Length: 457
Image 1: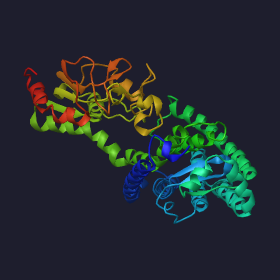
Image 2: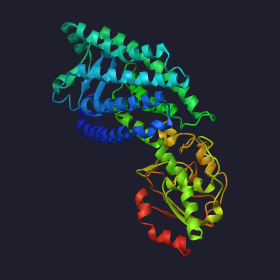
Image 3: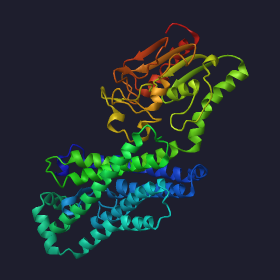
């Protein structure tokens, strides 16, 4: 399809990708700086893999979403690109493809390595061989095909392929290989995609099993790889087996998903850092300290993710992901509890007035994990964490109030026919009709104060 007829212009695509790539680079560098803080919490082998993955994700994402931004047509082993290194023609398309293949290949090798680590086979000689072969076989194959291709056979492919006229007309940075070589490459990539799919199914079954906590970094990292690396490759591959008038329905989701790979991995790394886990466990300790110092019951105003986390801190008991005991309930020490825009039943962001079942559609992103995340949308199934904090009622305080909005673009309003900001057994609530997520908190200070003091609101 011509770029002129796509629903989103090349300019918009590049701006979005550059923005994501820039943010990814900043977050990735921060993760690398703080990576040493992870070392005490994992083995040397896993720590080395995490650091290598962070570096590979950073390089892969920056190349893909800033320097390259490719539109790939697998059946001709080519396509065109619109990234910083492509337009104007700083680096030819084929070289960019080879770089992307090397980076993706080594990411795939890390994926296999994580599986070996879980089976205590990190030092197995086969692992080293699999890393070298897995990272090199496809780019070397493509390099060989590209170098052996004659100008005549390439021209024949250009004449047969319907998109190339548009590429020539718009002076695109493009490249193809002979049709027969493109077919061979398609078969190789189809085989690799089949392996990806098999591992995706196996890992998904493993991740959602009740005996596995997704706080395990290896499992979570595999899930991230499947969602943001494998799925975009599968989308690109699907172009080889069907004809689409509007190829943007495949290309645009694939490009944007792949450009998010580094951010998702970085956030996943930060979420599982000892600092974040310690912060979660310190909430109930802080509330106990306030009560001990003042001798009075503690009033709490919690916002967004702070609502379910603080509810768990008050409820006490065992963590769902690792069975860690965080203490007895502290309900007797609590006064008034106000939860603002809290995802107590899960998340379903409201976009343009329409609720979007984020976790039902993208269950592999970290915030949606089915153990200690906010998984919801496949009614009536929710994460073990959500089930845990909603198993009993009226433990948050002597008086319980909530504030929410029907237009919340982050947590939403209804999840499985329930108002997600509502807490079972609450004394009252305030629901706005037109507020976004942050304004729901910032514009409700008077309401919060009234709730804390028992005034009419």
